[in-house]
Length: 151
Image (tube, one colour):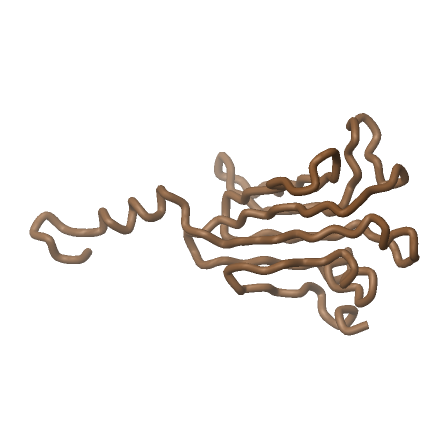
């Protein structure tokens, strides 16, 4: 399995698709080699779920119709200290949905999948896009001195 030799799989393309069947076959995106999606400084990452089916054995307790597909982790700085934001991406009644929008330009994605035929019946895709936030774009336009020169 090609992903077992690396602690993570770095993705730096501005858009892409991650497939659960790839994780099942290669181990890429698993806890042993999670996907790390990195955009440019000032960008955020939007992840959309395309859910092809789900099974009750992945349902999280206490969440109605939450079939756990993946976990997204993001390192943040809040109140002068480092914290990790962690969210479970769940399947449910919608085939396509926005699953996560980051606050920073980098997230770690860990797929929750097995390695047998029943797991392929719960196949899903995560489509990601790295884009600049509106606030970042406004900041760029304001980077001039009073005389019009670049700062």
